[in-house]
Length: 326
Image (cartoon, rainbow, N blue to C red; front, side, top):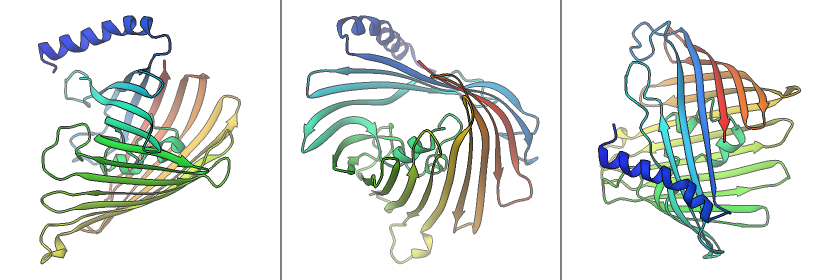
């Protein structure tokens, strides 16, 4: 739980936001909420965290964002995030700083971001997937990287090509814990109005051994069919070159798509496959559902979520998910 000084600071910031907005007509306050009712239909009997017949209403995630231009050349963003603590924990949702950065427009031929800003690791894939409220992208779901990190980032574009490079601490929004740094790089191409291609990688220079990720993505965006294919490999290397067998490699893919099926309705589906070479296993995730746009910013989505581990018992959830913007 938040201690009293932290709670007082957060309360003061929230109470001050209306005043800030009144003094800056071009500032923006926005938010997003993900909510579910879910029921576990099948699960491994030994799965303590997700027992069979578990069901709950949950406010799974909340974002609260404040954006404001400082001048013609500088913008700032502060975003808080809070997540459901999980079934049986009994803990309250605790907000933390998701983003806090200064954007310097036109610096070094692009836009320079200083502070806790988004990484390129799954930024494009998440946008094309379009259903973050249903599930994280395959890299995010398997904790291969972070959606944001603290450091310096540069974004720019030339014609139909764009880039995003970053040097940061590495632990995401957490404080630095070692002397190494993490390098990110992404190059995107837009060969057509709706098509997207991306090559992305990162190198995390850790005292115990480097880790690196390589990823390729191809996708299509539009009001009709929208979908993509993402493939990646992640290698965690031990510091000792004399024991290369200690390296761990994970690789996988994610294929997903959505398309209109009726007025205000879309259907969506996704398949993930993750291979762990050290355990010689391949796990699958299958997602399918319908998206009803009750309003532009209100979506209700019945969906089925199936995890197929390399074992006898699948994990199956039936859910109704809400995605609300304000």
